[in-house]
Image (cartoon, rainbow, N blue to C red; front, side):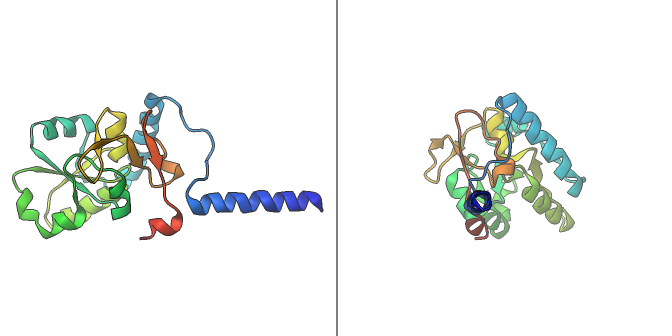
Length: 185
């Protein structure tokens, strides 16, 4: 009887962690090199959903951004974007509403690991709109040494990782997740 109560308490605790977005899924790699490997491996698997979409590495995207030749389109939800974004990123809706503003730039889509942005890029390509997808998303960006910014444009060491499965933030970064309820909106 006592063991059933303990099991019930533990199960309730795990359910609450899952609902709050704080559950831990096994051991994660400790080094940034191992995290990079995991991020790129996950992205390669996701890439099967949009094989014709052109990719760009974080390092190549940084070089374009440094020369003022890139605009980043963040395909994440507003709550995720509020945590941090790539430099000068615009929302998916902003891009769609004002595409003509960005014709002189290389348009690079991204999200946490670039699955959602890859699907967005694939859908745009079907409409004849060419964009490039950031390989490995914001996680690859910070793991390759890129900087992210808060809503005021200040550098910040915090990143939304969508969920524990994608919790591969670079060392020195705070990982932020939201509850399943918050992720719906």
